[in-house]
Image (cartoon, rainbow, N blue to C red; front, top):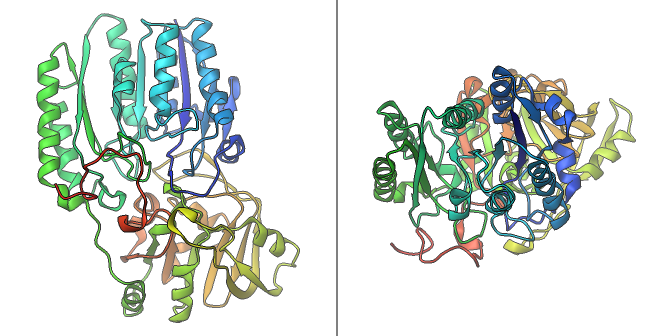
Length: 488
């Protein structure tokens, strides 16, 4: 048996000014052929689980591509064709099954539905090919995706610490179906809810209840049940909350599970809206807390949802209010890193940090912050994740520097990287466990590595293209009416 195993992942923020050409995939990690197999075998990723399943049955493994980029703007046509073309070429050469590690919120220049278009192309080449798909919890599920695969599943955790678990689950469903042991049938649906990412943590309500319902359905006989929160910053028609269930021959039963999930989500729709507080008030509240680490979340400039990661609003307020013993991860400013590389370690220097990119979609210009500090560390930015999310994957932050103002240690990188693992600090010589404050440009993924050490968490409403303020976003393609953009 020949099994095609591939990864093509990107969460597209259509409001982001960050371009997504092929080089952005190379920055995170793009591999072809045997290099793709080597990069992901043994990792806690869906692709890692697929490889292990194929090894168990002695199958020949075909890995045409494994590519992922940090979230950003729409994927350029050449980059999309590089990935999708490699997968389709492998299908043309003949395989017995395909196991795909996708995201579900890819918007590309040729298509608003990157994953659905790929699956449709694969089906056109091999109409009877068994195809298993894993998707992110933030998938915007489409009819095209559903129509062109055999079994589809999504993560049940945010932060996504179960990627390898769902990969094994859907992979085994596919292999059992190929042996004739089961007959998987799928049902799916959606509701007009543009849920906000900050309200999708699976340890919090309302997602906690919906995930529990999906797990209960699986314990009662469903082969798989998934609820997708969706990705609201991908302005495309199908953005929003959805669900899918896989049953063994019982499509009506699968549809009942989907309807229960979606009906309950609709009842809880108001809980999917984030409500914050003024930034100055949030920081002043943090000053009153004494036991650290205290996490300060700069969620509106979270590169893990497609932001620049160079907006200085929250850091400027932290410095204005005089917080001490702060470590910051991370500011993405390759120009600043080059300046610091030209300065000797230990020397004091003044730079204009961040603010290099404007954000036309929200009408904001970049505003650098003048910072004076000592060059503490210079690094190549490479390290291996040891925590529970992306375990075993090598991170490439690019040339990296730490600037120490005396009160604030700032990790400055050349590539975007969301801080979900302690390695973002420990790789550059900072022990986050002993800092009073940690400013993280993150939404929920920070919990994977930092929740166990945090004494308190404060959400800071800064500026950026991952804002939770819908009033500053100009939606053009999402279906209307939809809650909360419209009163429903």
